[in-house]
Amino acid sequence: MSTTESASPASAPEPAQEPAPKKTSVGKRILTYVVVLIVVGGAFYAFNYFTNDAAQAKAGDCAVVSGTSTKPEYKPVDCGAAEANYTVGKAGGTSEVCGEGYAEYTQSQRRGPKTKLCLAPLFSEGKCYAENTGDVGAKAVECTASASFKVTKVAKDAAPQCAEGADPRSFPEAKLHYCIGAPA
Image 1: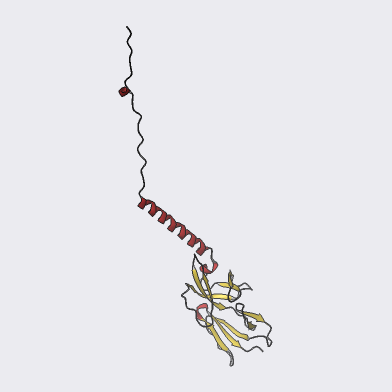
Image 2 (image 1 turned 180 degrees about the vertical axis):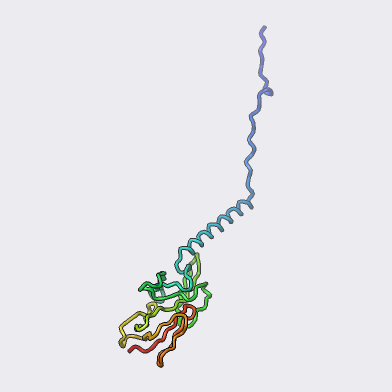
């Protein structure tokens, strides 16, 4: 007689079961997305701010402002540069109030800084200027009938004593003062 052995299913070892993956709650996922959006938005705003010349401008900086009055272009330059035609008197948000005679340069980006610069013109003593219609600022011209005015005196810090017939024009924040007379 032969004996046969049969393996019982109860004696085989069972495979180890892996724990079920943890499910993150919906609240944690939403919070993570919100934090990521805030970080990305902040980085985008910071990039626009730090790469924007007008947003970085401060009082005393000089610039070339060109283009038209409806579409001006701002480019910072060294104050000793021949092409510099404005200096920044005040810089701030779009609610900034500029004084009389200042040109206002406002830049509002859809996503980025909203900046207003109060710009004082840079005139040279003894030169005549013509007011531009449509363009930005006054242009230096020959002292003829086409000129609008002549700058008879330029002073920094303190207002000069203007000769009779010359009108003082001051930009105290920019520390610039002019005596303006008729072109002759």
